[in-house]
Image (cartoon, rainbow, N blue to C red; front, top):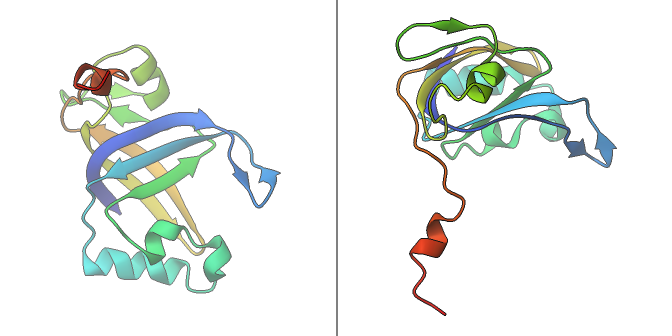
Amino acid sequence: MVIKGKLTVCKRQVKEFNGKSTDEKLWITLKEVKLSDDKMTELKAAFKDSGKKFTPDWINKFEGYVNVSTKFELPCKDPDGNEYASVERFIKEEKFPYMNAECKLSINVKEGAIYPNAIVFLSEGTPFNAFAEFDNDDED
């Protein structure tokens, strides 16, 4: 299955679920995602026997965001078609701003699991400025 959206998160981290730490994983979040009824049906069917605890929240209550993770390297292509073995190395080498970059994410949907396979950047993102809001703040 291929999902199109804007990349907002692409980083390795350890998350905690139910008080237990998980292994370090690469977390990918896309926003402004539109899923067809067929894709939503496929995703819900994959988790029909998993119960609420093990079904990703975004599947039961889809609001335009998709969150997936993997322990493995995720290959990527830039808008010019150049291939990279790791999206993390691609980002680290600062090929272009990746935040809000339009992309397509290939995911593998299996019973009770979703895994990302590869990511293709369709356009550059925008440079991230953590202090942008301060520049527009008129309050003292």
